[in-house]
Amino acid sequence: LMESWLVGKNAVWTGRIVLTKEQAVNWTLRGEGDVKLEINGVERDMRNTESVTLGVGSHTFKVTYSREVPARIALFGNTPNPFNATTAIAFQLPAKEHVAIEVFDISGRRVTRLADGEFGEGTHRIVWNGRGDSGMDVASGVYFVVMKAGGRSFQHKMLLIK
Image (cartoon, rainbow, N blue to C red; front, side, top):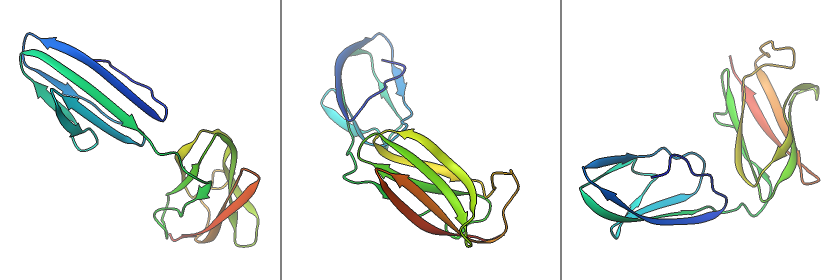
């Protein structure tokens, strides 16, 4: 089959392969979305399985990919929270947007900028390593992640415990 596929929101691939010996087909999925594999009329969820073994002979296949586009811009809570050392900050976009994400301390001083650029539609994840712009670890305490996108501002409180 193909070594790599890059897709957008929805896609369907169909085909037929002929094998002269038993063959294992393996895959690794990256990103989000529902991916179904149908071989000879039997459907499998490719997110719950990582391989299938096919016997000698002719096999028809169909791969179906679909992904929901978020309805609105959102900043999700960081995980874990409270955190020690690193935390992941997730956000979603319904369309391509310029996104700026910064971390501020309790007094309102900017600690670091995590992102400042274009992001496509979908859900994204950025990791903060608990360091400021200087590269030094910041102290334990309350921090705020602020995301600006689509002409709006979103914020979430984070707790760093060392």
